[in-house]
Length: 368
Image (cartoon, rainbow, N blue to C red):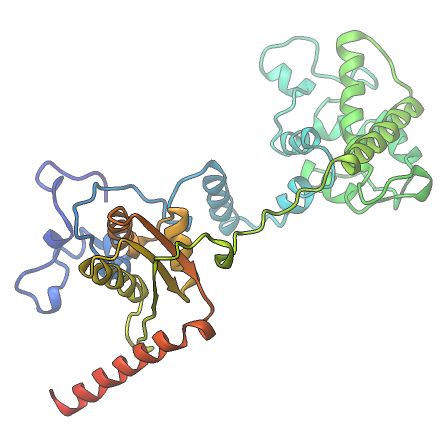
């Protein structure tokens, strides 16, 4: 669709609606087809009583705010939809029970982003394209699996089953192969696997040989692997467990003794778009309270999502305008609280809402 032209840069939704076609049908259908994909969302918007500046919304995320994580996740979903690759990044990289630095190392190995000889040779570094131990082509798979030195380390490792690393053609297959192994009891590890540390110290051993001309034997590598893995797991166990902060219960909120208590609810038919009716009811309740000169108000509703959005300052596509109205109206009170109550404690408001809906249905059937 591209950026707007000079003639359309100030257009609003109403400018996309035909004034002569029935039901306000969209005009210029072909040109604005991307907008029509969001027709239901646009038509469900509840406008604010006060003008609001335009906002950019990131639709894939419920908060409508873009984050690097959400962008990365979306790119992975799109890439996976056109690829037959079954490699699980979550299982084999990000959810491995190991230290953050090693997770980052695993990610770099899969992305071919660590400085092995082949990559350095491509970038113009001379005399580094071959393994200093065996003379083979030094790529990621060679350093971590197919080099004779690496294979001897894996063969001596206290893990079972021993991975078969002879004919691997990708780092993804390497990680999937070693992830099947479990640590044997003498190592003294709990749930943390040993193989990420073996990969890490194979890489460190190769760097020490290349840049410092220091040689670690296979047993020295495994000794450092087990010591470091045990130290990390022990340090992890010593960290205090993070306790989830309990949400403050409405019963614990300090309610002013002279505050006016109100209960609101809305009811609608399944065939009717009920989005925003709870918010509109709450707004009407606040306006009615202001008309009665109420200065302290406690608003109770059994719509937990709505109360959560108001108290957290959150956003929702179709409710953004009315949420802004509620927040502006709230500034006119000396104190105001928005509390969630179970439906069982909101029975009277619920009954009134359903009675009003029934009355409207009867009136429409009677032709009034």
